[in-house]
Length: 487
Image 1 (tube, rainbow, N blue to C red):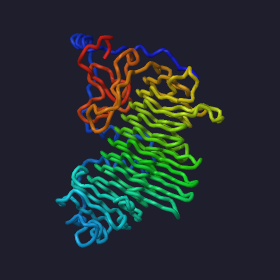
Image 2: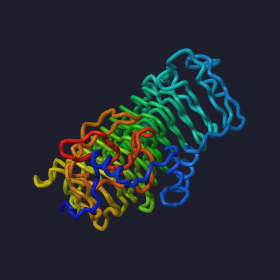
Image 3: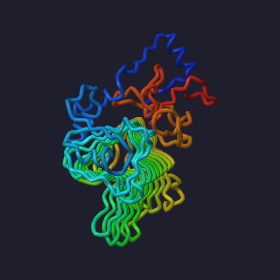
Image 4: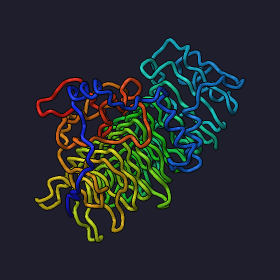
């Protein structure tokens, strides 16, 4: 392994004083686009340069489309917070037809506690709309799950909290501690806490919070403190989410979830377990734990792609791969993968195991930080183990900072410590790392997707002319002159 140190392109960056001088000399710089935060994404989908499966492409297009009047459909209003009976959530769902909307926005109470088990239904394309996650919680009462959708369409849940689900199974797999969807699931403005899937006697536990046979779409949502746990010789995967046919996470947080198996059978994907690729945009995956892959685990054919844009993967822990393990192609754009931890270094597979990112096939990386990821089993000469891969894998692209490349990195990659500050609220919907300006980013980043905003979203431009785009998920765009002369 080596640091893959190559000469950087001659493209120096300007601190604010020099920027002012350049402006006086009429040095032009491109202005950010005046577009919504999803326009660039939709353009890349339209021109075919953002690879996703057809189903996920349509899911993203639907989720980011401009608002249009909804077709006429029946809306059924929930009038009380009882577990069952006339006007309750359970009975209202039971009376609904496919394509109906269940309206919780008129409730005066703040919690619905389920005392007779999960709410089971089989309609196609049911929507459940709450008044806001901070205003209403649906509580599984640690008795069972919350929603079990046996329909084959899409279950959409908006603006509500789901808490204290406990899916316990001894005769089959435990699927989805709070939400089980035989079709697809959309969670928009949803907070999920303390959702648990527990299996015993050699069965699997899949999706501590959410399990879906189809796609899962998270938008403006939080999944935290959830667990998939298998006893006996069972296996556990997806401490937060288990998506059987692709996942999209937009401006969401998946944090402090766990996938755990009590036997020697490994657990996979403490935060996310994703089949068939997906998209992570403006999201933070942090503090998740599992045996094999702590943050994100992917499975499926090598032809599927996981694309990450303006996102952070931080502080995840696993024995083998702390941050991201990708079976298919992995594309990283303007993201930060840092402070993930793993423990196993060499398992006799012919390659070493990285703590930040591990590739199975080659992908693309542009303007991304991979730094301060630690494998406790690595030799002392490797204090950080940021990127590894199977033989023949590596990254194309440019303008990245990877402290240690154990798989090929683009030739202009720098290898310095970016001095990342702790993961915290720096504005926007998700937590981020602020880097310390310095030599590591002297040559600047790139914005190959033409994105207007960085991870924090609207109001936080990816580029403030005449400054260059910066490397990583967060753009400093500082208007002060630092002691080291860089910004």
